[in-house]
Amino acid sequence: MQSNASSRAKLTEIQVMLTTLMSLYWTADETIELREAQMQMWLTDLAEFDLECITYAVTEWRQEETRRPVPAELRRLAIQAQRKRDEALRLPPPPQPRFVNQPDSEERRVEKAELAAEGRAILDEWARLHGYPDFWDHAWPALRPTGCNLFTEVTKWDAARHGGARRMPLHPAEVMSEGEKDRVRHASLEAAQ
Image (cartoon, rainbow, N blue to C red):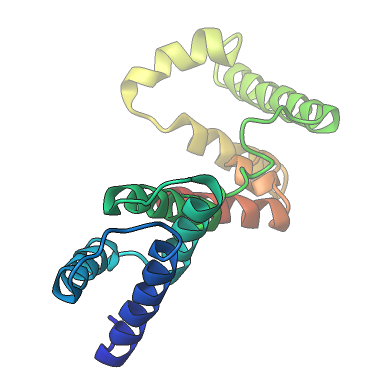
């Protein structure tokens, strides 16, 4: 909020600009009271704009028009200046993270295919050991309605047969580098805001 002193200084500067602008145009002989009343109307109509916008409006009018302005015309120019300034100050949209909606690299596609093949092989081996010809066509449809968490069971079985070392990742984040994980966390936080 402007202080009274700065508000008075602003109004004085506006008054000087308007008086100088109006002196460029012929006017009828008017009483001092009438001119003061007119100036008060001008100040009331332009007080909401900052000096930069009013200076733009006065300069634009002086350079482009050949007649005396009315308050509405200078207000229109001041609004135009204010919009231009606000658009220039508006922040650009943040850049989209590079990993969102971008196809995987060939190396990543091969890695995913290898992991998927390894996972299918592990699941099929588990299914055969439990009496099913394969996992997806026979074991999964038979065991899914039971509520058994097959993924947990298969993972435990696979870890046990490899001496406790789990080979099958539980989540895609487990095969991500720390840098990729940080980028995903950052993008998730930005999306939440």
